[in-house]
Length: 267
Image (cartoon, rainbow, N blue to C red; front, side):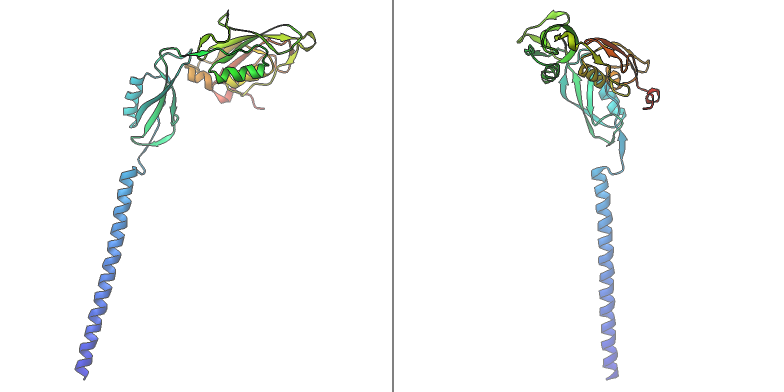
């Protein structure tokens, strides 16, 4: 009887060891599987293998491809625009932006400046307000140029439109990005405006703010660190003339721009 009991106990112990052994083996297998999955995921997603997106703006496509190879990314041209002040065939914009953290091998999408000027149809701005005219020009890919005021009973109503000194009619083809100068009416009782505070604004925003007050940009002086068109777009106003003064509509305001935020006076 005792011998039978001993045999039964040995059998139970062997069974328990077998279960424990298989349980440990299963745990080890699961852990190994998780490690392999993690490693595989890292390989597939290049986890931890990131680079900084280079700045391709103002480079030719060939130069951008060479820089991309050095920076361990790829570039793809996906769109084009026409910017008059930028050389044809160079990079105008990129996505993701320069300085962004991206994975190695990531494609950076480029918009280049067209070599052939794209033309758009000139709208009819006669009778528009300045705000309406500027909106219509932007919708057509054009820019608001200078405002020239003449005596008329309708203040801030467009009476004429020109480009590079020549009158342009509705339906004429003009180069995309052109500045359209407007002849605008002004009543003698409304011929004054206050010069706004534009310090701290980027170039385009500063020009828009002056136009909002029926003024023109005068001399635009960039610091020596502003070397490219992209730089000029990102430059900020650190000095302006005639702030807060009352001036006739259509007057010019001189502005000074920099890329150094330390030069911008504190508010």
